Image 1: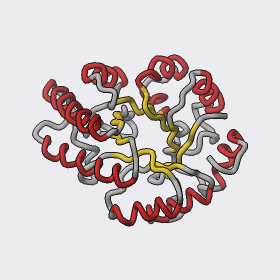
Image 2: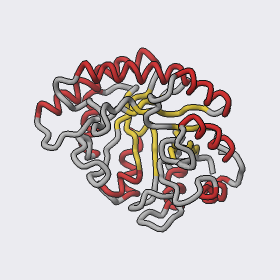
Image 3: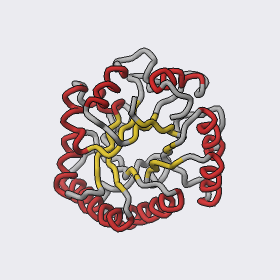
Length: 262
């Protein structure tokens, strides 16, 4: 199997509360690449050292989310300054980590209006321009209503519409199959139609968000075969909650890759 998988250090390796230690744990499991959501509680120096010591590649980070109850600012009017600061901070971390992908979060908007749509498009246009100068791929991701009630970007139609309007080679779709199943279903046809817009994929089983091999709604053996047939060549982030021990739970990945490194 030629698909490329990276460990999500925000979800996996909960055996330790320390993000820095998760880099080495992922390397011990055989991962050569990782992603994480919000690394900003750690200094850049410590993160770079942990990444270097583990000899792994950083594939993706998220832009800062704001306060604990927030999930970004992109669709929030009057928060342009906070949005720009979050992008600047994310770019500084991405550059130091030699990371080429940043997920830009939209924010919580309970009753979206035209003003939110305008703010979202304006802020993403600004971010895309920054990403173009930095050689970074920006990503936007629809999130299902069960995981994040009120999240502004909760449909793929809205995501594709804004991507088409901005029309930047540095702004693409982050396709989390966990969210796709709960928002639209019909995975075969939707993956085929969305894939030309996709810059990154994530996955987890539905509904419990555990390993793809655990019981649930999605047949991931079929999904992996489909992605290979469609010649998907970007990364797949393992954004799932291990049901038990993280390393032991990777037996599914070792089986399909037939190797001790990923």
